[in-house]
Length: 229
Image 1 (cartoon, rainbow, N blue to C red):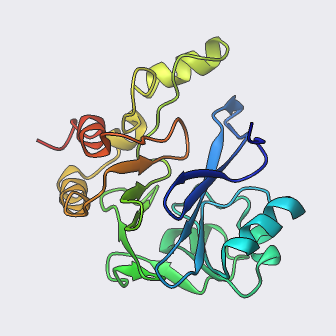
Image 2 (image 1 turned 180 degrees about the vertical axis):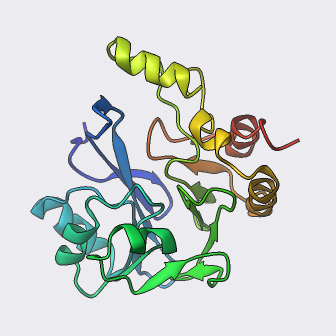
Image 3 (image 1 turned 90 degrees about the horizontal axis):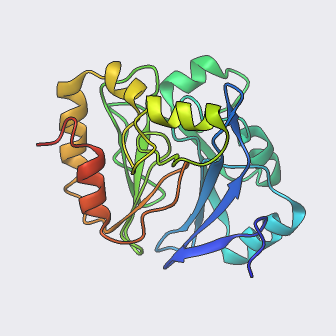
């Protein structure tokens, strides 16, 4: 049995590491995605705390080229990850730089930034200045990598967990959280999602909830049915 504190293989050249996490006092868990590109370089997406053992495990995969903070909320462990891998570039959305001026970013994602990062296609999901989520496509595994844009919190935990999942409409199946929908500029967001659908992904990685390893495109369409027709 694999340890919860070691990398878990997900598909070709992509691994995950889960970590306990609370949002507003509510346990929601979180997940780091580790990707290797076609050049053998490693990219850490949404870093979590890294033990020396996990750091060594990552180093065996290849040189860490970049650390990605995928939105304005997934940044708590970025500085520690940068200390572990000082040669790695640190990337995040432009709005995060304003929130965390202590983080020295190598590059920033916005609507005019390059469409690749370390040879991986990236796209800032438009329509929500409060979140500014960056989607990443990992070609080798055909995985769309997200953070908060889709969640699946289920019906587990105490009453507060279940209430939060219900209010966000993420208790039954993977969905875009209701709070994101309420504050989204729908036309801009729809255009971004239509762009994501041009990527040939078959799987979807999310930070809160089980990864979607099969029928990812169909699951993504259902999760985004509030805006994708």
